Image 1 (cartoon, rainbow, N blue to C red):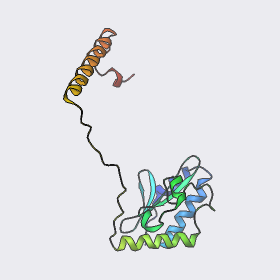
Image 2 (cartoon, rainbow, N blue to C red):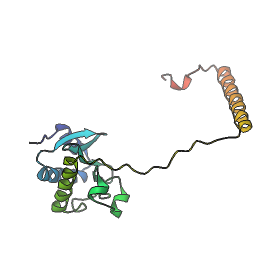
Image 3 (tube, helix red, strand yellow):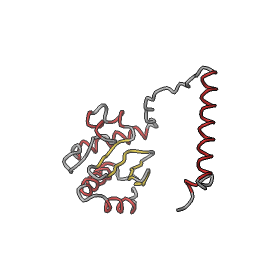
Image 4 (cartoon, rainbow, N blue to C red):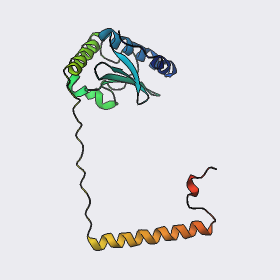
Length: 170
């Protein structure tokens, strides 16, 4: 049998009034589809685990979200997903997410993927290329920065400020 986490109860209770029924509905659907699911709080949001991450939900000021960890393999390319961080866009009422039957199907698909040991696909990121500067230009930048830092330090000393004055308690 899965575990219901009292911290998820607290999260739902503290959510905005419009979001509480949405979160409660999503939670019940996940538990109905996967009775062995464990609830966790990850990244300060409720998440559901079964042999790894299945899905998670969150509430914000004006909307709630629900998403699958392996979204691309479960839901596919849904244009609503681009509206918010979840798999189904901004949820503002219980009618916004897919039907309970469709959500259960998605949860069972996620379970099968976790059971098979499938990892979430890595998101494509831009390759980081180092910026190469001409040596003379780099040297000029260093001299310019050094002069700026010295001028700032002298100004702060003249004002009676200490080295890390910005970080000292007020």
